[in-house]
Length: 301
Image (cartoon, rainbow, N blue to C red; front, side, top):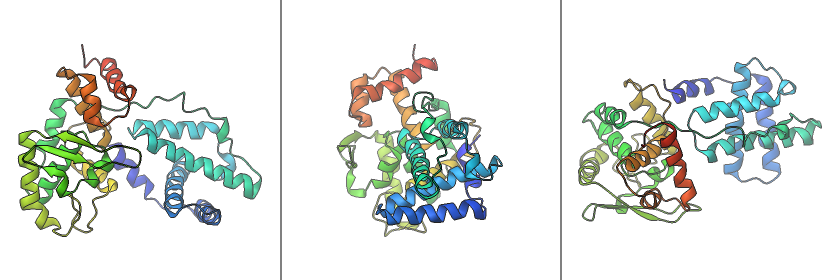
């Protein structure tokens, strides 16, 4: 079962005029208040997801929205194994829309009454080693197949975040030393990640034979055939496509592969401090979430 694939089709359904009008006026309100373009885009984009969910529930007006609708929506997001940051941004879009309604219609949808953060744990699926093998086994030797294999190794073997995968450049890879330099993010430090010799060979083959065929002008290591940039959306769509022919029934996203490699390293007896450095966590508590998951699932004895 691939929840992301099902949801992406649902999200592509057009909104009715009622909800679309609110999207448009909400966007204008954000612009007038001076919000950054990226914030305006993110808020309207994620509010559209929520409105699609309301439409599917036959909720015809915003005045019918109950706190339970938002709670259930939050649960649904958690089941998709999305990152905590992304889920919070989805809820923030609804909160901002609530402020918009309060200011323009003197009405509140009751969002502030929902104490979601403490109620719903963010639990991610973990792939077994056999299931990871099934992902790689499904890929062919075509240029796209080689690109997808390189992408999976960056997600799983190197334990990168989805956004980090899209930012890897050719110069970040030191094949001789078998190291990958992960560029620092907005709030993260850069780090070096070791690359297994077999993975080095796969990444080199992609760079030498597949990348020039797909898009020789791309700036980053992973490239798309239509655009120069390989975005996080492209990563998710590629993973969905790779999952579809397999027998895997878990709901998997790119970040679940990161959890999976952490689990497998723990099974191999790697110290938690080393896994923390490998994943680029700033504190040990974040890494310990992976341990709780493995104990719960009975993967570590």
